[in-house]
Length: 134
Image 1 (cartoon, rainbow, N blue to C red):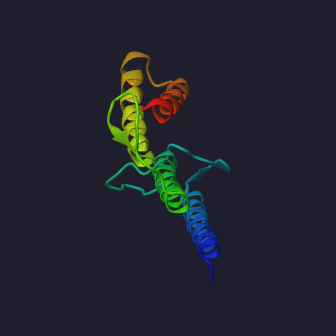
Image 2 (cartoon, one colour):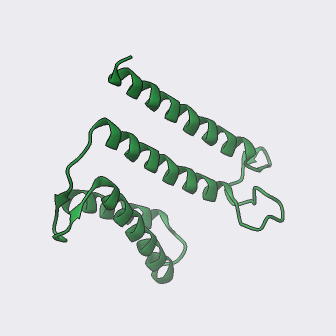
Image 3 (cartoon, helix red, strand yellow):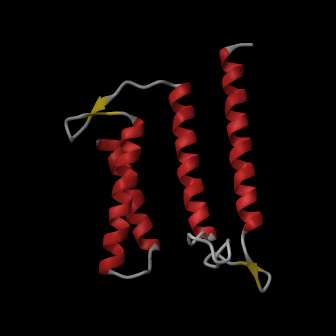
């Protein structure tokens, strides 16, 4: 087998696992009045507030890590120096973006309130800036 074929098999296997986990998350989601409830606990009287939104958040983080791993395997990179004057890789920039997004959401929650969709847009713009210039 060629390396290209092995890589395609690896990508397909990762996508299959991620799809299976996503299917399980939505299968396990609580349903109220015929609709999926995003805020109802998935585990009654559980030790953690596992809601559908929480599970999807962690699934997205895992999917990002898998995607960046596959990108790193498929086309290795050379660290680059940005405006911070430190060498960063894609993974470093992803970490900086996620850390900044957490702080942006906390500041937004404290100053504006719980209307978070606009904070998501700010976080995406921040991530684009980090990946472009850091």
